[in-house]
Length: 53
Image (tube, rainbow, N blue to C red; front, side, top):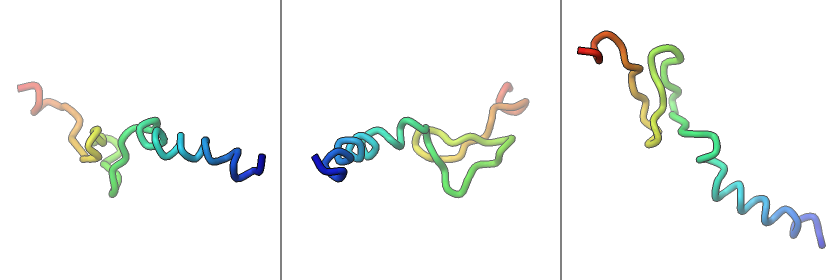
């Protein structure tokens, strides 16, 4: 078995599951303290005093 043939299954697994294993990624990145990236790769605000009302 060649190295290329041995790496092909690994490459296919990374392509299939690689992004979801690391969670959503937003570009540009969300604010480090006040934001988070949701599953649709959209930046959202962290809940705060205004959200509690």
